[in-house]
Length: 377
Image (cartoon, rainbow, N blue to C red; front, side, top):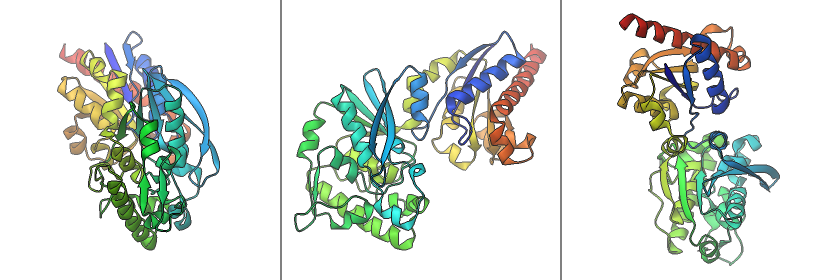
């Protein structure tokens, strides 16, 4: 029997790589002679670099500016000549306590430092993953780190952070274009939000970053001013581009430089060879920390399940918690499932015992599947 295990991370307890190892152990607990293919996945957000490193990527460590300019130790991964830069490594929300004040001051300068380092050390292209940032600066900090000159109406440099964007009058990208000449840019994201409006970066993601009503209004005004200044600098108009609002608008700045927005899951799945592995499988097992409505909107488990369904291969899921109905799960192509919280006293217990629980739940699913296969043979 050939089994593919292709989980995303279990946030707070297991990386996708660790979850795949626990699932593989569970498969072998149930069927010692099963052939197991480990294909951990991600959707372009937090944890993507862990998956790419497991695929043979080389980790490059760099000290950069954090979201409030304090130094942070970050890294990117190089694989087949491409540098994969995860924005959250430099300006992730985990680097600070979100408040209305930080929502206005947080910036993406460190992201630009990572991109610059990768380009200066020979990367032929850069894939920017943009989830989990603390900033809503439209990528202005990233462009400044790459050499952009951003001035106010008096000709003075504009301060970092989304709260200063309403002061932007002119943007000069000459140095950025020179630095990135011949470098292909791609943006990996699991969201389609535009930069502006009720579904944009400030309105949708601002509250997660500490912004209240007043801060959201200021950030929205700043992003509008910023996108207009970019357009005057000769870039494409990114205000309504799907995905440009990801990462507090850092995706929009990349698009302004010519980057193409792609599904983070599709990109990772291609790197990990998920399609080929699924086609050869008798059973696929996926999962993540929480299977819920957001899982059906571009997240990795839904993508894995869709691939398995197209290949005619049954797919099961293990999750920390499941907030989908049986009909929703089966509609997504998932025919069997286990939730870790069903077997523990508390969610905290599930987090603490996650490796063992994932292993045990996987073994149960494989035993049930094998019994069904044997009964039908």
